[in-house]
Image (cartoon, rainbow, N blue to C red; front, side):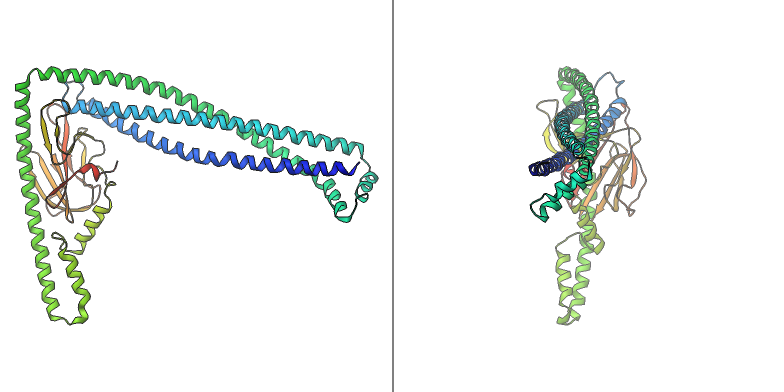
Length: 439
């Protein structure tokens, strides 16, 4: 066998093995990233489906009414928006699956080409082995080398080349089977997602029609403008009276805590007057306490810090809920020219829902509102949270509560609506609860 044949073989091995392993690395690395992106979309999809299911449960309780309330119309609108988000989510997943399928198919083609090259080279070696099948021929080929190094390379060639070829063929066959299975799985997933996409598009169209029907109902109500205006005035008057009670309870708690903090500061001042300059660090503690008008104890400081640190991550006061009236002064969502003021947010939930504390703290007030329903206020350091329209309260003033602890049960009116007003305060200053709750 000519010497050149060995070097062609060695060169062939070198050029086959390197692209093979490189190709596998380049293929699987993007798959990991795509898998993470798909998982993120799946998590978002699950969240949207859960929220839509909650809204369906809320609407189901009042669907037998002849007229649709403004708050229910808001739920329908939110439901349409989230359904559209769900459709967009599924579309993104379908597109991502298409890209994965394309990449997988390209990789399968490349692996088949690599396999064919290996088969061709293996066949060449078999033909050579058949032609030079005696031990004498092999020895002659080895000893005809120019030097010892080349002879050793030829010896290794005879010992390892066939083994390497078989190993690589087995590896490529295995990877090709895996890629073929993956491609089939992706095709199945794409088909499932496409079916789901069509279903969601149909749901979105249905919900759009429902929204139009409800908006028409609101327009019909506008024809009774005087009566509607009177109803809004009555509702606002009740809300104002309730808010006055809430503000009075909060102001009383602020005053109480300020007095406790002042007493503690005065006591610390007397102690400092009796100490030497060696106790200077204690003065720093006193100065720190004076920064907080309502933080009389170390526990208060801890609660305050924890509440602030969980901004945007606090749990909702109910397990299933939809915001039907947002924070602040704003136009009525469906009736132009009518303004509403809300120092918290109105949350619609399902009948009999448990109302829970969004963070640990101490109940500082429990009283009865103008509608005869319970109101609970919980203090978390300087912060306070307000829970209204409870049919019953399972806590009393002074009760220490934990995050997620049940404090009462929501009240349901004669129309089947279960709605509460939820507020967050820092001292007397109102906060937008949406900014504090988990999204």
